[in-house]
Length: 239
Image (cartoon, rainbow, N blue to C red; front, side, top):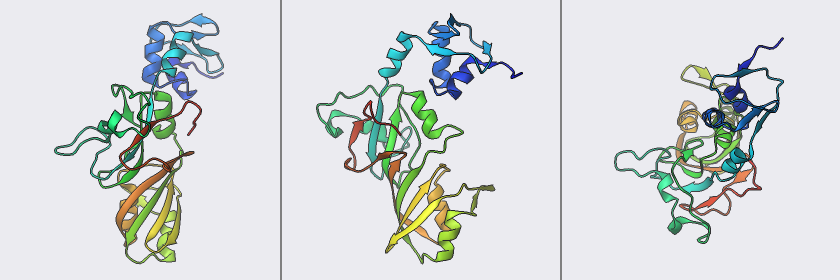
């Protein structure tokens, strides 16, 4: 028989919300298990039991904002660093793709994946733990696409190595799709996100990254979003 599991952990595994959000919903009496309210943190249930959020929790989730930004180089993804600004500071009316779109509250918003300060392209900031888990959770396999300009000779051997066989920090990398687009441009499609991964991968095969732009996360593409602009993720859009 399957052992009981913490309710908050099971809610996160089912994609109902993040584990932190689950704990908040539980203590506020917003969660039922097989029709009974469970409001005690640490409660354990069997994985086959039915979990539902009440209407207040669902309404709260629908009010959570997710923002797409085309991050310019020179901005950091997380908290401001020294003289560098965070890309989240671009979420203002001045930088909105649609000026009449309401500007969301930045409080509680966190990056769901990062780009280093020298890179540009699609960034996601969200208040929704479900989206954060989908994009950067431990078991995430979300594809992310990058267009990369490199300096150095791109050989067939280098392309094979970039696609599979390299390790970083003593840990093998997952298989990647790496294509030569022509000239000095490569396309990378990764489903993991190690620190400065593409730059370090290229260095291992004798290439230097000149520029790096993230163009897609899952089904969401950068196209149509100018550099330095942001827009809200539409309610009918899915990663």
